[in-house]
Amino acid sequence: MKSPVIAVSGLTKLYGREETEVRAVDQIDLQVDVGDYVAIMGASGSGKSTMMNIIGCLDAPTSGTYRLDGIDVATLPDRELSRIRNQKIGFVFQNFNLIARTSALENVELPLAYAGVGRRERRRRAVEALTRVGLEKRLTHTPAQLSGGQQQRVAIARAIVGSPVMLLADEPTGALDSTSTTEVLDLFDQLSSEGRTLVVITHEDEVADRAKRVLRMRDGRIDSDLRQAPLDGPPPRLSLRREAS
Ligand SMILES: Nc1ncnc2c1ncn2[C@@H]1O[C@H](COP(=O)(O)OP(=O)(O)O)[C@@H](O)[C@H]1O
Ligand SMILES: [Mg+2]
Image 1 (cartoon, rainbow, N blue to C red):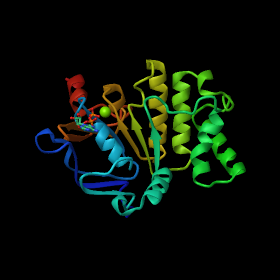
Image 2 (image 1 turned 90 degrees about the horizontal axis):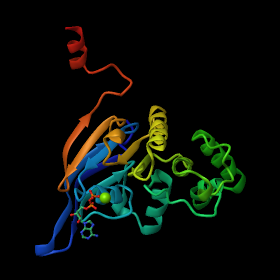
Image 3 (image 1 turned 90 degrees about the vertical axis):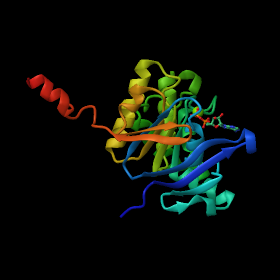
Image 4 (image 1 turned 60 degrees about the horizontal axis):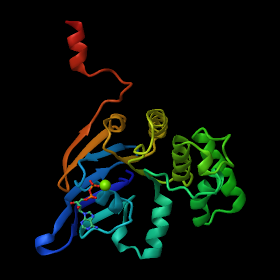
């Protein structure tokens, strides 16, 4: 049995103290298995970003445990934590976070450089990842020379190039028009169908509709956790029956 990608237990994050205390994340238990595609939804202030920061090893919880791919991250010294984060998680952000005046290739090579991969191998894998996202004709373009949707695809190439155990995306379509949104969501569908694990934070129904599982947060807790049928799959029973009558 493979370890779950995410195994969280009693996870709590408090901000402030005493009368100003905020329970941004409040006693959350959550497991995400290999190959799952999870959307995390919830109103502003419900704790999504706090949850994302903890899952992404960018912040530590006040209490509770987090095992990332079987590793209890609280036990790791800072250097080791950075290494594990770089190796295990591919991040995708709302505003792409690409390095300006630097080619798509070099942006995608960067995490491999941190991981100590040699130059030739780095280049080979970056070309492969950019081809994977349909940008093989844009290798030497800089972010300013690319559309928003193309920039986000460079960011996705950068996120997958190191073969992480999960992609963690925070409002990945928040800065995109509807055409680019569809492109990015189609790409996520493909990555999911290849067995990759995706966790996507979003407030857009269009994004959540593509996920296999939708978590709704409210006041730092998980309010609902629902599996949904694939969009391309058979229609729900109810509508089938209604059509037949
Ligand atoms: N650094 C912080 N200091 C104090 N309170 C914070 C901080 N970050 C978030 N919060 C509070 O924690 C709660 C959850 O915030 P957040 O995780 O950003 O929610 P979301 O991303 O769903 O909008 C909110 O009440 C917010 O005001
Ligand atoms: Mg937020």
